[in-house]
Image (cartoon, rainbow, N blue to C red):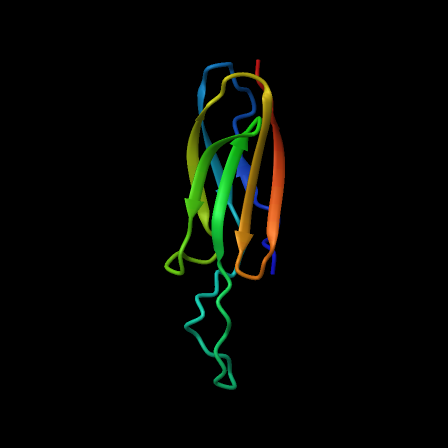
Length: 108
């Protein structure tokens, strides 16, 4: 199951050289594989295992997540904005799903 579109929060106006906080909330069940369904069968593990952020193609943030993280993970990181460009965030889960979202930064 690929995650749904994240809620990414960016400042409305950004100046070149400014350091901003990027906040992302991703809706995902993050099933650990430790629970059983009502029939007693194990529910397969399905977590987001890798989250990356790139700015104009350069890797600026990477997180490798484990089964200890809660459902609907929230991540935040800081970015010193060198100028106008595109922020690309992506994540992969255990089902083989990959989600990629792009955000144009409004740089003054």
